[in-house]
Length: 347
Image 1 (tube, helix red, strand yellow):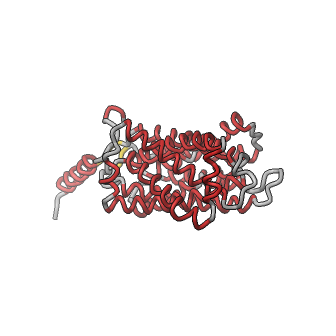
Image 2 (cartoon, one colour):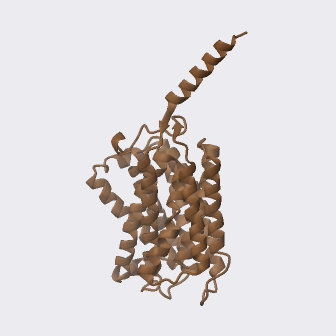
Image 3 (cartoon, rainbow, N blue to C red):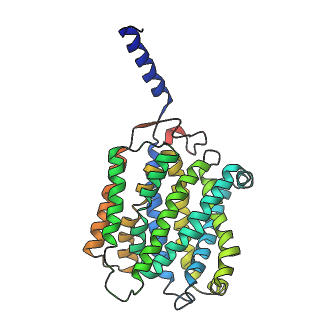
C-alpha cells in the first residue's frame, strides 16, 4: 500500500511526463489555414465566371468535368513551379513510391475527381456563393473522423464551432435564390458530395504527411487528380472535345487565374493540417464562404441576401470558436512534426 506522500509524488511524476510529451500548437498553422480559405474563395469566385464563357457556355452537361480537369491540371503546373523554385521537385518521385504515397493517392481520388466534380457541378447549378457555403460544412466530417482515427483532441468549444459551421451552411441553402436556377437543389446535393470528399481527404492526407513533406504532398495530390481526370474521367464522360477547345479560348486564362488561387489554397491547406491538425485547420479554411461574399461583391457584383450573410456569419463564428477552444498544446502522439515545414522561430 502506497502512502499519501508516495501517491502525490507519483501523480506529479505522471503530470510531468505528459507535459514533456506535449508540444505547443504552432501559430503559423492557424495563419496558413486562414490564408488557405482566402485563396480557395478566389479560386471559386473566378472559376464561377468560366461557365458563362466559350467553350463552356451552352456546352454539354459534362462540361464542368472538363473545367475541373483543366483547373486541376493548371493548378498542378503552378504547384510544380513552386516546388521547382523551392528545390522540392526531387522529393516527388521518392515520396510517391511509399505506403504513405499510396494513401495520398487515395486522398487525391476522393478529394479530386469525386469531390471536385461535385464542387464544379454545384457551382454550375447552384452558383459559386451557395456552393462555397455548403461545402464549408466539411469540417464537421473532418472533425469526427480526425477524433476517431487521428486521436485529435476537440474541446467543447471546438465542437460548438464545428456545429456553427454546419448550421450556417444549412441557413444558406434553405431556399433557392431568385432567378432562373431550375437545378438549384441538385447543385446543393452535389456540393454535399464535395463536403464529404474533402472531409475524408484531409484525414487521409494528415496520415500520409507523417512521412511526406506537406508541400510535396499537396503537389502529389493535385497531380494524381489531374491524371485521373484526363486518363479516366474525361474519356468516360465524352468531355475531351470541350477540354481541348478551351485551349483556343480566352477562358483558359481565367481558369489559369483560378488555378493560381487553387495552388495557393492547397499548399497552405496541407501545411496547416500538418501543423495544427484537421479539426482545427478545416474550420478556419471553411471561412472561404465568408471570403467568397467579399470577393463576389468586388468581382461579380453579387448582391448577397440577408439569409446568405447570416449563414456566412454563423460559419465565421464557428471558426472563431474553434480557434478559441483549441488546446494550447497537444501530445506528440497526436501531432507528429518530425517533418515540420517551418523553422521553430516562425511557428
